[in-house]
Each structure stands twice: as structure tokens, then as C-alpha cells.
Image (cartoon, rainbow, N blue to C red; front, side, top):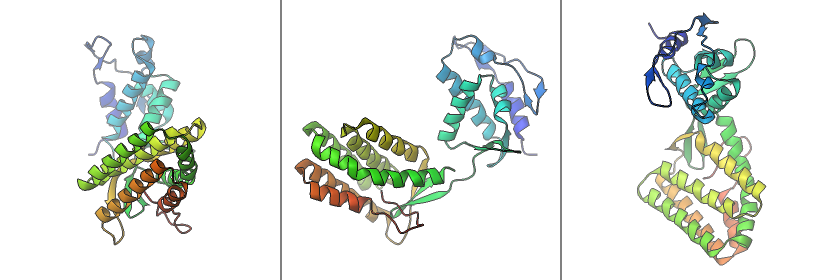
Length: 281
């Protein structure tokens, strides 16, 4: 018989816990409440562990529970899982944020709602490649579109404000992209691509614009699991072409060639037809 969330919760509740001195101590078994085990907030009372450490520990306990159930299974309410993890509301909210950013849980409101183990990965097209994502597909597609809208603003700022050291750093990121392309590693290429764009954003004196852009990149990156080929063009050829475009873009910034830089970023961010999910790298 397959393990249920309650079976997994019972196992996790009895797992030994280590205190700040790394001494194993048995975790007290608590009576059941609302299908879960209620044990108070023992983990937070000592103050010997940081809030981030308690949140990470709570996230790990829920992740262990998720490993025992099929995708899409209901894990319980936030309060039930918070009680299982023996943490405060604030700490559990941080743990939930960690779990969502890792694509492990989804939250459904209303009757019968609560926390559920994440479904299998959907896909979103990115140019002639496909990103395999966790369940935040809509968020990622929106983030890509907004990112593309902000690109010309950041290129304009880079034309005015990039120092020789900034340009040298951009060339290094392009080199990392070229190395990933040469090694046929599309995942490394995509991450190097995003680091290049983050470095361009960091040049802007507009901190709001830069932080918004980097936040969008972080959202896209945190929900991306892999990169797969799509369409008729081989993924390797597409990556080589995008690599050349980014190299030309950085060269245009180096020359302070505004016309070429803006033309290239428009080519980079060419919007798809309405309703399509095809987005460029």
C-alpha cells in the first residue's frame, strides 16, 4: 500500500533532531490533531537556531513528506503543516516560500484547499528551445515578456554609463556563453546568458529598474529545470546564433554604437505573435 501524507508525517515526527551542539535527541511524539501530529513550537523556543535555519529545517521536513506521496497529493493545511514542523507562523511562511521557489509545493485556496505536492513539469518555449519548468509556467512566461520590455531601457543606460571594467566583465560573460555552447551544454548556456543580462542591469544607475529586472531573472531561473530542443532547427545551431548575437551586442556597447545596440536588442527580444509562448533567449 502506498504511503499517505499522514503516514509520512508520523515517520517524520519521530525522526531524531540535532540541537546546536550536534547532539542527537529524540523528538517527542505528539498526539494527532486534524490528521497531523501536534507538538507545539519546541523548535523555536531555545533561540539557539537562526530564523532562516528554522525555516530551512521546516522546508526539509515538508520536502521529506512530499517524497513519500504522488505528485498533486494534498499534504494538509498550512496550520497542520506548521504544527507538524513545530515553528511559528512567520517561520513557516518563510519555509513555504522556499518550497514554492524550489517547485515542490502549490497552494490552493478555498474548501478542500491547502498545500499540495507539485505536479509534473510543464514547458515554456524560449526561442528555438524549451525550458522545462515547475508548475509556475504562467509566472515565468509573464516574467520573460516583462524582461524583454525592459531590455532596451537597460541597454540605453549601459551605453551611457558602462565603464571599461564593466565592458570587460560583459565580455567575460559572453566567453562563458561561448564555452557552454562549445561544450553542447544548453543549461550552462542559458544560465551564462542570464548572468550577462544581470551584469548589464547592474550598470544602470536606476536601482529600481535594475532590481526589478534582476528579480525577473531570478524568478525565471528559479523555476527552470532543464533546456530541451524545439522546432525544426537543432538546438545547437540556435544557441550558436544567439551566442553570436550577444557577442555583437556587447561589442556595440563597447563601441558606444547606440543604433547597433538597440537594433540588436530588438532582434534579441522580438515579440512572438499574439497568444504564442515562443520567447527568445
